[in-house]
Each structure stands twice: as structure tokens, then as C-alpha cells.
Length: 302
Image (cartoon, rainbow, N blue to C red; front, top):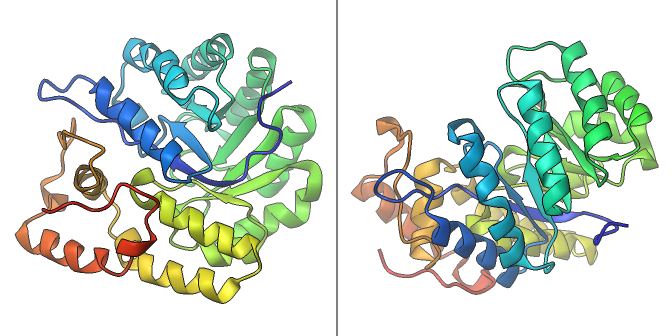
């Protein structure tokens, strides 16, 4: 029996922190997990796109799973990202997640494969991982149609969650919700929480944004659950100018200002998205709209 019967709400995605030598900064990674636990987020996911799984070696990725689980210690569900460059690699990560005791796994088919390969991959995941499987359906990889998702869900009892990211997200969430109903427990939205209210209207029960302000999105979700849609929409609108700026540089910058990361080093930095002094000045202004809404870890000075 799994520790968590129903995964829902805002699951913070951990960016992978790096030290000056570009090795994984273990202390910062564990600090990010602690941050999620202490600020009211509903779950933790690592590594997926936000965690740059495609830049991580197999051994370093697997080496950090058990320390992450030990740090969280059952306080929140930990979802291990199993996406990889090949189906055998995805299955390797899933087996290791089973052995380590991850609460759930999430995966999408490797890029440049086919829908048939992707569907077969999900069926094979059901043979190696006993717990909940989250089917990630992302347009930049090998998206499945709603009917294909339904077929896989019928074939693999462990697939009880879907992260639906085909644009436009809310419409496809509605499509999955209509087609699958209570065959799945939760549909998670993507795009960093930018469309969260509309996703909730269409049938989503969760969201997976990068963790740096996911505590505020968790409050949006909880206000919505409590029936206070106006308050949820108001808070989301105040947060939205930060959400639309989400890039690796911004995630790391905000986590440093909140006292979580000590390093903002990137393995694959993009000069086009590096923050300059004017960017940081604007972010400081935008922070004021949510300063009193964060769940601890207040914003420090630049």
C-alpha cells in the first residue's frame, strides 16, 4: 500500500542546483526539498524538465534519490522523474525508484520516438514499478491523443495520474477529464501554473510548477478548494507577472533570495535569459505584490 492515497495540489518541481565545478550541489538540492516541505507545498518532483533531467548523468541522478527521500522522510510525496533518452533508461530509473521507495514516478516517452513506442513504454513501466505512475503528456516530446492515453490507462492499473501539457492546456485537460472521469485520480496541469484557474475549471486537481513560488500557488489551490474563487483568482493575478518570467535564471535567483539556494550556477546557461540589473529591479517590484503571501522563507535583499 502506498503512503499517500491521493496525490493532488501543487507539487513543486526542484531545479537541479550546481556547484562551481558544475557537479550537483547536494546541499542546495536537499534545501529545496526542505523548502517545499516547510512552505505548504503538496508534493515534490525531481528531476523533470525544470530539473534539467536531460543534462544529468545516470549515476548522479540515481545517487541523489535516496538522500532526497531521507530528507523529506514521508512529510510529502516524492515523485521521481524517470524520463530519459531511451526506453531502457526510463525503465532503469523506474526500477531504481521502486527499490528506493519513491512514492510515485513520472515519465514521458523519449524525444524522437513514436506514439506506439511511447504507449509500449508506459505498459512496460507498469511491469517494473508497483506504485502510482504519472503519465506526462508533453507536446515537445511524443504527445499521445486522449484516446491513446485512455488506452494506456486501461492497460496499466498503476497509471492513476496524468500531467497534461499539450497546448492549449486547459482544453486538453477538459478532454482528458471528460474521457477518463474517475479512472484517474488527478489531472495535473503544466506551464508553470500560469493557467491554473482555467485548468481547475476544466477538471484539473493539481499543478506542477517550479518550486520557487509554488507555495503561493498552493495557497491559490487551497482557496479554490475552500470555495473562494475570487480570492484564488486575485492571488493568482498578483503572482502571474512572476510566473510568466519563469526561466532557469529566474528560478535560481528567487531561490537564492529566499535563502534556499547558495549557488545560481547553471550547466547550460543561456545568455539571452541571464538576468541583468534592470531585470532584477523589476522582479523586486513584482515581489512586493506577493511578499505577504509566501509560506515562510521571506524574500531577502538583492
